[in-house]
Image 1 (tube, rainbow, N blue to C red):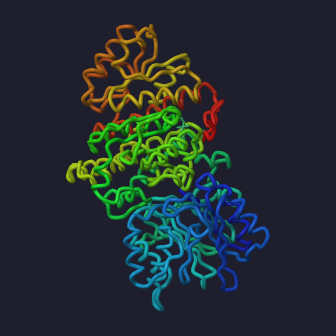
Image 2 (spheres, protein in one colour):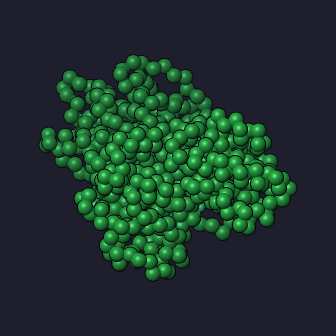
Image 3 (tube, rainbow, N blue to C red):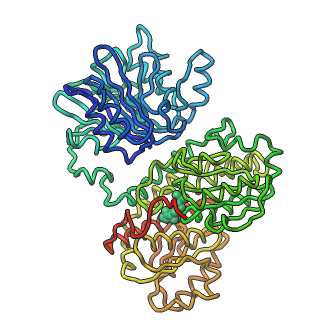
Length: 612
Ligand code: F6R
């Protein structure tokens, strides 16, 4: 997730672009840059690090120009650096981009064969090369732009400048957002509304598969195939604070709703890798040969908190497809033990921030003993990513709410990709089965969307329990970690006492807690554990608990048993934990909000725990 801005008008563009970028910093902040045109000359300024670095640079020497584009980056392809910062230029063409170009390796190789030289590691630079290649004496920029976009697979929002066209700004989108702002003698473009609000409230939302051409007086929209599009402008009534959260009350809620996009990007960003065509972020390179991988006799997954819950879910899939022992450990315990680690051990570290001190120390200890380390990280080039032998990034964009949501489900999806990648390489996962599973994995974002459509009824259910003081979450198999995660979410933002338990353990102690009206959230999907879960639900019901059940859509039996049922789409049992996580997040969110807590910054918690 990155932020794009563009301006064409009567004012100096640099200040307006910087101001817009500052309102989009929540979309990414590892580097930033702008490009402006004046007197037939295009000037680019870029800086690694937060926007303040770019601001300092521009403050000392502001480039002139009344048309420009800007970008704040959250790295995907290519580490955060000045050379990978946008804008990217090739020939007469300069672009900024948000999204992931899936076929970038193939396009890049083809361009290199034709003699193109690349100055960055990004997928974005490809776009400038392709448009420049399509330009010709009889081919106008718009045609070249459209032709180049037709060659891209993946998601993009792009803003483009042609060095010799100081009166035109080109933009396009497919899968990544772009909104156009209408002014008097000036027009704007941005990834999101907050960047536009200080300048105009009249906007046009660009749709997927559309290109727009902005001049000072006019905006023309057409499809990628050149058909004109007529669209009415809308007037935005949001305040700036509302707009930053896209109209959601809290970042956490926004991030819960972002999950279809976050998962789609994480999956799409690694598809080539899984098909073993390229080495993506480097994770394919840890094991150069099948023989290297066969030597691995055990796998440890180490992580903390929510990331540890993702690890627990991943164990089921990995063990089943690698046919290797997989152990999951809390990094804060693992680092102080003396685990059996050697060159035949693979350690998978999972961390949103990539800076968690316990996880970082755990991988340092593991490496010192010769183990190979593969990490699943959200923040590109963070310490854990840098110190691992290989890394597979979750492309969720920055997570601002302290409680992890979109990164959790993306971590599970990433673990599935690791399982597919290594299982295929080792030959322990049959090709046709792996392909079938991958196909279903790609359907997960759409299924999450279906669950999010039930948010209002989930809220109604959650609010019935908002005044309780404790809550028990139960599940079995790969749903047990989701019970743990449901309890953790509720604890950390609503300050209620909550426990997650494997349902089979109820009779060994926790059932003593059950009394009339005790809330129990049970995950009872139609999988191998269904009958056992039904018995556990009967057990707590007979002690007069109030049960909320997460069930498989179409399960009529469950509705006669429990008053509150949340239905989840039917999917492969290894994939349903991702789906079950979503109602858990919503339940915690609605209860915490109802109780009036600061959901995004719960007491005593920090987003990144860099101390022991
Ligand atoms: C809970 C939460 C924490 C983190 C934990 C690990 O919502 O966010 O439990 O999961 O502190 O952090 P990372 O993943 O950054 O290593």
